[in-house]
Length: 405
Image (cartoon, rainbow, N blue to C red; front, top):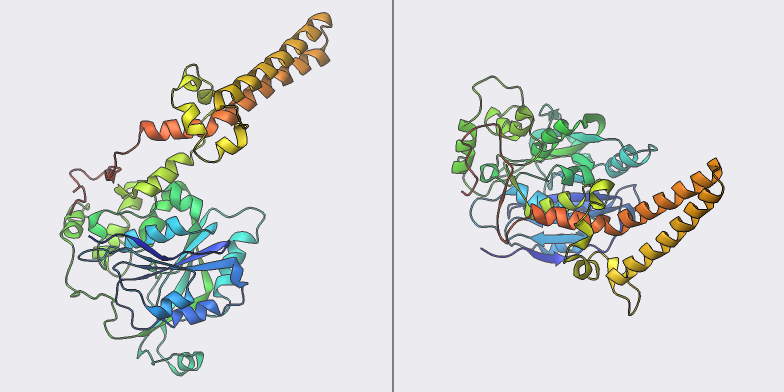
Protein backbone atom coordinates (compact mmCIF):
# COMPACT_ATOMS: atom_id res chain seq x y z
CA UNK A 1 0.00 0.00 0.00
CA UNK A 2 1.27 3.45 -0.88
CA UNK A 3 1.81 6.01 1.84
CA UNK A 4 -0.10 9.16 2.70
CA UNK A 5 1.61 12.14 1.10
CA UNK A 6 1.27 15.85 1.85
CA UNK A 7 1.57 17.32 -1.63
CA UNK A 8 0.83 20.86 -0.44
CA UNK A 9 0.48 22.19 3.12
CA UNK A 10 -1.72 25.12 4.08
CA UNK A 11 0.00 28.31 5.25
CA UNK A 12 -3.20 30.05 6.36
CA UNK A 13 -4.52 30.65 9.88
CA UNK A 14 -8.24 30.41 9.10
CA UNK A 15 -11.42 30.21 11.13
CA UNK A 16 -12.96 27.66 8.76
CA UNK A 17 -11.50 24.62 6.99
CA UNK A 18 -13.31 23.23 3.92
CA UNK A 19 -12.69 19.56 3.09
CA UNK A 20 -13.27 18.26 -0.46
CA UNK A 21 -12.70 14.64 -1.49
CA UNK A 22 -11.76 12.88 -4.71
CA UNK A 23 -11.21 9.20 -5.44
CA UNK A 24 -9.64 9.65 -8.89
CA UNK A 25 -13.09 10.17 -10.36
CA UNK A 26 -13.53 13.93 -10.77
CA UNK A 27 -13.32 15.24 -14.33
CA UNK A 28 -14.34 18.81 -13.44
CA UNK A 29 -12.70 20.96 -10.79
CA UNK A 30 -14.72 24.14 -11.24
CA UNK A 31 -16.10 23.91 -7.70
CA UNK A 32 -12.77 25.35 -6.60
CA UNK A 33 -13.34 28.48 -8.70
CA UNK A 34 -16.66 29.14 -6.96
CA UNK A 35 -15.11 28.51 -3.54
CA UNK A 36 -12.17 30.83 -4.23
CA UNK A 37 -14.53 33.64 -5.28
CA UNK A 38 -16.60 34.07 -2.14
CA UNK A 39 -17.63 37.27 -0.36
CA UNK A 40 -15.89 36.07 2.81
CA UNK A 41 -12.27 37.23 3.32
CA UNK A 42 -10.00 34.64 1.71
CA UNK A 43 -7.81 34.41 4.80
CA UNK A 44 -10.84 33.40 6.89
CA UNK A 45 -11.01 29.95 5.28
CA UNK A 46 -8.79 27.27 3.76
CA UNK A 47 -9.48 24.68 1.06
CA UNK A 48 -8.20 21.16 1.76
CA UNK A 49 -8.40 18.59 -1.06
CA UNK A 50 -7.95 14.92 -0.13
CA UNK A 51 -7.41 12.29 -2.85
CA UNK A 52 -8.11 8.71 -1.73
CA UNK A 53 -5.65 7.25 -4.23
CA UNK A 54 -2.56 9.04 -5.58
CA UNK A 55 -3.75 11.19 -8.49
CA UNK A 56 -2.49 14.79 -8.37
CA UNK A 57 -4.34 17.18 -10.70
CA UNK A 58 -2.35 20.32 -11.48
CA UNK A 59 -5.51 22.44 -11.48
CA UNK A 60 -6.33 21.27 -7.97
CA UNK A 61 -2.80 21.89 -6.73
CA UNK A 62 -3.00 25.47 -7.97
CA UNK A 63 -6.42 26.27 -6.48
CA UNK A 64 -6.32 24.76 -2.97
CA UNK A 65 -4.42 25.56 0.20
CA UNK A 66 -3.64 21.95 1.07
CA UNK A 67 -3.49 18.78 -1.02
CA UNK A 68 -3.20 15.29 0.47
CA UNK A 69 -3.03 11.91 -1.26
CA UNK A 70 -3.67 8.72 0.72
CA UNK A 71 -2.50 6.00 -1.69
CA UNK A 72 -5.40 3.69 -0.80
CA UNK A 73 -5.72 0.22 -2.33
CA UNK A 74 -8.93 -1.35 -3.61
CA UNK A 75 -12.33 0.20 -3.04
CA UNK A 76 -11.89 3.75 -1.76
CA UNK A 77 -12.56 4.70 1.89
CA UNK A 78 -13.97 8.24 2.12
CA UNK A 79 -14.12 8.21 5.92
CA UNK A 80 -10.34 7.86 6.06
CA UNK A 81 -10.09 10.75 3.62
CA UNK A 82 -12.43 12.87 5.75
CA UNK A 83 -10.29 12.09 8.79
CA UNK A 84 -7.15 13.13 6.91
CA UNK A 85 -8.81 16.47 6.16
CA UNK A 86 -10.10 16.86 9.71
CA UNK A 87 -6.67 16.19 11.21
CA UNK A 88 -5.02 18.64 8.80
CA UNK A 89 -7.58 21.39 9.44
CA UNK A 90 -6.25 24.61 10.97
CA UNK A 91 -9.66 26.22 11.46
CA UNK A 92 -11.92 26.04 14.50
CA UNK A 93 -14.78 24.79 12.34
CA UNK A 94 -14.66 22.23 9.54
CA UNK A 95 -17.05 21.84 6.58
CA UNK A 96 -17.33 18.73 4.39
CA UNK A 97 -18.33 19.67 0.85
CA UNK A 98 -19.29 18.04 -2.43
CA UNK A 99 -16.26 18.53 -4.70
CA UNK A 100 -18.29 18.87 -7.93
CA UNK A 101 -21.01 21.39 -7.06
CA UNK A 102 -21.55 25.12 -7.67
CA UNK A 103 -21.45 27.39 -4.61
CA UNK A 104 -23.00 30.88 -4.37
CA UNK A 105 -20.82 33.76 -3.19
CA UNK A 106 -22.37 33.91 0.29
CA UNK A 107 -22.00 30.19 1.00
CA UNK A 108 -18.89 30.41 3.19
CA UNK A 109 -19.85 33.68 4.90
CA UNK A 110 -23.13 32.05 5.97
CA UNK A 111 -21.22 29.27 7.73
CA UNK A 112 -18.81 31.74 9.34
CA UNK A 113 -21.67 33.91 10.60
CA UNK A 114 -23.52 30.93 12.05
CA UNK A 115 -20.56 29.76 14.14
CA UNK A 116 -18.66 32.98 14.90
CA UNK A 117 -21.27 35.78 15.07
CA UNK A 118 -22.83 34.60 18.38
CA UNK A 119 -21.07 35.39 21.66
CA UNK A 120 -20.46 31.66 22.15
CA UNK A 121 -20.02 29.10 19.38
CA UNK A 122 -23.23 27.04 19.08
CA UNK A 123 -23.01 23.32 19.84
CA UNK A 124 -24.56 22.33 16.54
CA UNK A 125 -24.13 20.33 13.37
CA UNK A 126 -24.95 22.74 10.55
CA UNK A 127 -26.21 21.51 7.18
CA UNK A 128 -26.73 23.46 3.96
CA UNK A 129 -28.87 21.58 1.45
CA UNK A 130 -28.19 20.88 -2.23
CA UNK A 131 -30.36 21.20 -5.33
CA UNK A 132 -29.93 18.64 -8.13
CA UNK A 133 -31.03 18.33 -11.74
CA UNK A 134 -31.18 15.59 -14.36
CA UNK A 135 -29.69 18.06 -16.86
CA UNK A 136 -26.11 17.18 -17.78
CA UNK A 137 -23.39 19.52 -16.56
CA UNK A 138 -22.06 21.95 -19.20
CA UNK A 139 -18.33 21.94 -19.86
CA UNK A 140 -17.91 25.14 -17.87
CA UNK A 141 -21.14 25.70 -15.90
CA UNK A 142 -22.15 29.24 -14.95
CA UNK A 143 -25.05 30.78 -13.04
CA UNK A 144 -26.73 31.43 -16.38
CA UNK A 145 -26.72 27.65 -16.90
CA UNK A 146 -28.35 27.20 -13.51
CA UNK A 147 -31.12 29.63 -14.48
CA UNK A 148 -31.83 27.76 -17.73
CA UNK A 149 -32.68 24.50 -15.91
CA UNK A 150 -36.30 23.97 -14.90
CA UNK A 151 -36.25 20.69 -12.95
CA UNK A 152 -34.13 21.62 -9.92
CA UNK A 153 -35.17 19.66 -6.85
CA UNK A 154 -33.72 18.59 -3.52
CA UNK A 155 -32.99 14.99 -2.61
CA UNK A 156 -34.80 15.43 0.65
CA UNK A 157 -32.35 16.32 3.35
CA UNK A 158 -29.03 15.72 1.62
CA UNK A 159 -26.79 14.48 4.43
CA UNK A 160 -23.99 13.57 2.02
CA UNK A 161 -22.51 17.06 1.79
CA UNK A 162 -22.54 20.55 3.29
CA UNK A 163 -22.02 19.51 6.92
CA UNK A 164 -20.18 21.86 9.31
CA UNK A 165 -19.16 21.31 12.92
CA UNK A 166 -16.59 22.47 15.44
CA UNK A 167 -13.25 20.70 14.97
CA UNK A 168 -13.11 20.13 18.73
CA UNK A 169 -16.53 18.44 18.78
CA UNK A 170 -15.57 16.25 15.79
CA UNK A 171 -12.35 15.09 17.47
CA UNK A 172 -13.99 14.47 20.84
CA UNK A 173 -16.33 12.11 18.96
CA UNK A 174 -13.33 10.23 17.55
CA UNK A 175 -13.68 11.59 14.00
CA UNK A 176 -15.12 9.44 11.22
CA UNK A 177 -15.60 5.70 11.60
CA UNK A 178 -12.86 3.83 9.69
CA UNK A 179 -14.58 0.44 9.92
CA UNK A 180 -14.22 -1.46 6.64
CA UNK A 181 -18.00 -1.45 6.29
CA UNK A 182 -17.82 2.19 5.23
CA UNK A 183 -15.71 1.63 2.12
CA UNK A 184 -17.08 2.79 -1.20
CA UNK A 185 -20.28 4.66 -1.90
CA UNK A 186 -21.88 3.60 1.40
CA UNK A 187 -20.26 6.35 3.47
CA UNK A 188 -20.56 10.05 4.17
CA UNK A 189 -20.18 12.91 6.68
CA UNK A 190 -23.55 12.10 8.27
CA UNK A 191 -22.00 9.06 10.02
CA UNK A 192 -20.19 11.53 12.28
CA UNK A 193 -23.07 14.00 12.23
CA UNK A 194 -25.58 11.41 13.43
CA UNK A 195 -23.25 10.21 16.21
CA UNK A 196 -22.72 13.80 17.39
CA UNK A 197 -26.43 13.92 18.24
CA UNK A 198 -25.62 11.44 21.02
CA UNK A 199 -23.39 14.15 22.54
CA UNK A 200 -26.31 16.56 22.73
CA UNK A 201 -25.45 18.67 19.69
CA UNK A 202 -28.35 20.18 17.78
CA UNK A 203 -28.93 19.44 14.09
CA UNK A 204 -29.57 22.70 12.22
CA UNK A 205 -30.62 23.09 8.57
CA UNK A 206 -30.56 26.54 6.99
CA UNK A 207 -33.01 27.19 4.16
CA UNK A 208 -30.36 29.05 2.15
CA UNK A 209 -27.91 29.22 0.59
CA UNK A 210 -27.82 25.87 -1.18
CA UNK A 211 -25.23 24.31 -3.49
CA UNK A 212 -26.16 23.28 -7.05
CA UNK A 213 -25.28 19.95 -8.64
CA UNK A 214 -25.63 19.08 -12.34
CA UNK A 215 -25.90 15.51 -13.55
CA UNK A 216 -22.76 14.08 -15.16
CA UNK A 217 -21.29 10.87 -16.49
CA UNK A 218 -20.90 8.26 -13.76
CA UNK A 219 -23.14 10.37 -11.52
CA UNK A 220 -22.45 8.26 -8.45
CA UNK A 221 -18.86 9.43 -8.62
CA UNK A 222 -17.80 5.82 -8.27
CA UNK A 223 -14.92 4.62 -10.47
CA UNK A 224 -15.78 1.02 -9.58
CA UNK A 225 -18.94 -0.82 -10.70
CA UNK A 226 -21.98 0.57 -8.93
CA UNK A 227 -22.84 -2.84 -7.52
CA UNK A 228 -19.40 -3.33 -5.94
CA UNK A 229 -19.89 -3.25 -2.19
CA UNK A 230 -17.36 -4.11 0.49
CA UNK A 231 -18.08 -7.47 2.12
CA UNK A 232 -17.78 -5.75 5.51
CA UNK A 233 -20.59 -3.35 4.49
CA UNK A 234 -22.95 -6.26 3.86
CA UNK A 235 -21.87 -7.92 7.09
CA UNK A 236 -22.39 -4.69 9.04
CA UNK A 237 -25.86 -4.35 7.59
CA UNK A 238 -26.76 -7.91 8.53
CA UNK A 239 -26.44 -7.06 12.22
CA UNK A 240 -29.00 -4.30 12.05
CA UNK A 241 -32.21 -4.75 14.05
CA UNK A 242 -34.98 -5.76 11.66
CA UNK A 243 -37.06 -2.60 12.12
CA UNK A 244 -38.24 0.12 9.70
CA UNK A 245 -36.01 3.18 9.34
CA UNK A 246 -36.55 6.72 8.13
CA UNK A 247 -32.92 7.67 7.60
CA UNK A 248 -32.87 8.60 3.95
CA UNK A 249 -33.84 7.46 0.47
CA UNK A 250 -31.31 4.58 0.34
CA UNK A 251 -32.06 2.42 3.39
CA UNK A 252 -29.09 0.12 2.75
CA UNK A 253 -26.26 2.60 3.22
CA UNK A 254 -28.28 5.08 5.27
CA UNK A 255 -28.95 2.50 7.96
CA UNK A 256 -25.24 1.83 8.38
CA UNK A 257 -24.53 5.58 8.61
CA UNK A 258 -27.16 5.91 11.34
CA UNK A 259 -25.98 2.85 13.28
CA UNK A 260 -24.05 4.84 15.89
CA UNK A 261 -27.04 7.11 16.49
CA UNK A 262 -29.49 4.21 16.85
CA UNK A 263 -27.15 2.44 19.30
CA UNK A 264 -26.56 5.61 21.31
CA UNK A 265 -22.85 5.07 20.71
CA UNK A 266 -20.44 8.02 21.01
CA UNK A 267 -17.29 6.64 19.38
CA UNK A 268 -16.50 4.97 16.04
CA UNK A 269 -16.36 1.20 15.75
CA UNK A 270 -12.85 1.71 14.38
CA UNK A 271 -11.18 4.94 15.42
CA UNK A 272 -8.35 6.66 13.58
CA UNK A 273 -5.28 6.37 15.88
CA UNK A 274 -4.31 10.05 15.52
CA UNK A 275 -7.89 11.15 16.20
CA UNK A 276 -7.84 8.96 19.30
CA UNK A 277 -4.53 10.48 20.46
CA UNK A 278 -5.90 14.01 20.09
CA UNK A 279 -9.16 13.08 21.76
CA UNK A 280 -7.48 11.60 24.80
CA UNK A 281 -4.95 14.42 25.12
CA UNK A 282 -7.80 16.95 24.97
CA UNK A 283 -9.50 15.57 28.06
CA UNK A 284 -9.52 17.72 31.17
CA UNK A 285 -7.87 15.63 33.91
CA UNK A 286 -9.31 16.47 37.38
CA UNK A 287 -6.88 18.60 39.37
CA UNK A 288 -7.09 16.27 42.34
CA UNK A 289 -5.82 13.35 40.25
CA UNK A 290 -2.89 15.43 39.02
CA UNK A 291 -1.76 15.99 42.60
CA UNK A 292 -2.30 12.42 43.82
CA UNK A 293 0.58 10.96 45.74
CA UNK A 294 2.99 9.16 43.46
CA UNK A 295 2.05 10.80 40.18
CA UNK A 296 4.62 13.57 40.38
CA UNK A 297 7.32 10.99 41.10
CA UNK A 298 6.89 9.23 37.73
CA UNK A 299 10.33 8.49 36.32
CA UNK A 300 9.46 9.77 32.87
CA UNK A 301 8.21 13.21 33.90
CA UNK A 302 11.51 15.09 33.72
CA UNK A 303 12.42 13.68 30.31
CA UNK A 304 8.96 14.20 28.82
CA UNK A 305 8.56 17.72 30.18
CA UNK A 306 11.77 18.87 28.56
CA UNK A 307 10.85 17.58 25.10
CA UNK A 308 7.08 17.83 24.56
CA UNK A 309 4.46 20.54 24.10
CA UNK A 310 6.84 23.42 24.80
CA UNK A 311 7.02 22.69 28.52
CA UNK A 312 10.79 22.81 28.32
CA UNK A 313 10.57 26.44 27.18
CA UNK A 314 7.99 27.40 29.77
CA UNK A 315 9.23 25.59 32.85
CA UNK A 316 12.93 24.89 32.39
CA UNK A 317 15.48 27.67 32.72
CA UNK A 318 18.93 27.33 31.08
CA UNK A 319 21.05 25.05 33.22
CA UNK A 320 18.13 24.13 35.50
CA UNK A 321 16.35 20.82 34.89
CA UNK A 322 12.63 20.34 35.26
CA UNK A 323 12.69 18.71 38.67
CA UNK A 324 14.87 21.46 40.05
CA UNK A 325 12.52 24.06 38.62
CA UNK A 326 9.55 22.39 40.29
CA UNK A 327 11.46 22.00 43.54
CA UNK A 328 12.39 25.69 43.55
CA UNK A 329 8.76 26.63 42.96
CA UNK A 330 7.66 24.29 45.74
CA UNK A 331 10.18 25.77 48.19
CA UNK A 332 9.02 29.29 47.34
CA UNK A 333 5.42 28.34 48.02
CA UNK A 334 6.41 26.57 51.25
CA UNK A 335 8.11 29.71 52.53
CA UNK A 336 5.07 31.82 51.59
CA UNK A 337 2.65 29.41 53.27
CA UNK A 338 4.77 29.23 56.41
CA UNK A 339 4.94 33.03 56.62
CA UNK A 340 1.17 33.32 56.26
CA UNK A 341 0.65 30.59 58.86
CA UNK A 342 2.84 32.40 61.39
CA UNK A 343 1.02 35.67 60.68
CA UNK A 344 -2.31 33.96 61.33
CA UNK A 345 -1.05 32.38 64.57
CA UNK A 346 0.01 35.81 65.77
CA UNK A 347 -3.28 37.40 64.74
CA UNK A 348 -6.23 35.01 64.58
CA UNK A 349 -8.26 37.30 62.35
CA UNK A 350 -10.41 36.39 59.32
CA UNK A 351 -8.12 38.51 57.15
CA UNK A 352 -4.97 36.58 58.15
CA UNK A 353 -6.79 33.25 57.75
CA UNK A 354 -7.92 34.29 54.28
CA UNK A 355 -4.33 35.16 53.31
CA UNK A 356 -3.18 31.71 54.48
CA UNK A 357 -5.88 29.99 52.41
CA UNK A 358 -4.90 32.04 49.35
CA UNK A 359 -1.25 30.95 49.71
CA UNK A 360 -2.24 27.28 49.99
CA UNK A 361 -4.52 27.51 46.94
CA UNK A 362 -1.74 29.26 44.95
CA UNK A 363 0.52 26.31 45.71
CA UNK A 364 -2.08 23.77 44.56
CA UNK A 365 -2.91 25.76 41.40
CA UNK A 366 0.74 26.03 40.35
CA UNK A 367 1.32 22.33 40.89
CA UNK A 368 -1.78 21.48 38.87
CA UNK A 369 -0.69 23.85 36.10
CA UNK A 370 2.77 22.33 35.91
CA UNK A 371 1.63 18.73 35.92
CA UNK A 372 -1.60 18.96 33.92
CA UNK A 373 -0.12 18.21 30.49
CA UNK A 374 2.02 15.53 32.06
CA UNK A 375 -1.13 13.99 33.47
CA UNK A 376 -2.74 14.07 30.02
CA UNK A 377 0.25 12.24 28.57
CA UNK A 378 0.34 9.68 31.39
CA UNK A 379 -3.38 8.94 31.17
CA UNK A 380 -3.12 8.66 27.38
CA UNK A 381 -0.17 6.26 27.53
CA UNK A 382 -1.93 4.10 30.10
CA UNK A 383 -4.66 3.37 27.56
CA UNK A 384 -2.45 3.85 24.56
CA UNK A 385 -1.91 1.77 21.45
CA UNK A 386 0.97 -0.24 20.19
CA UNK A 387 2.44 0.96 16.93
CA UNK A 388 0.17 0.08 14.03
CA UNK A 389 -2.60 -1.29 16.25
CA UNK A 390 -6.14 -0.51 15.17
CA UNK A 391 -8.76 0.93 17.47
CA UNK A 392 -12.08 -0.78 18.10
CA UNK A 393 -14.50 1.01 20.39
CA UNK A 394 -17.12 -1.70 20.59
CA UNK A 395 -20.79 -1.74 19.74
CA UNK A 396 -24.13 -2.62 21.19
CA UNK A 397 -24.63 -4.91 18.20
CA UNK A 398 -23.17 -8.26 19.23
CA UNK A 399 -20.63 -10.19 17.14
CA UNK A 400 -20.00 -7.19 14.91
CA UNK A 401 -17.08 -7.74 12.51
CA UNK A 402 -13.90 -6.05 13.63
CA UNK A 403 -13.40 -4.27 10.33
CA UNK A 404 -10.18 -5.96 9.25
CA UNK A 405 -11.66 -6.47 5.77
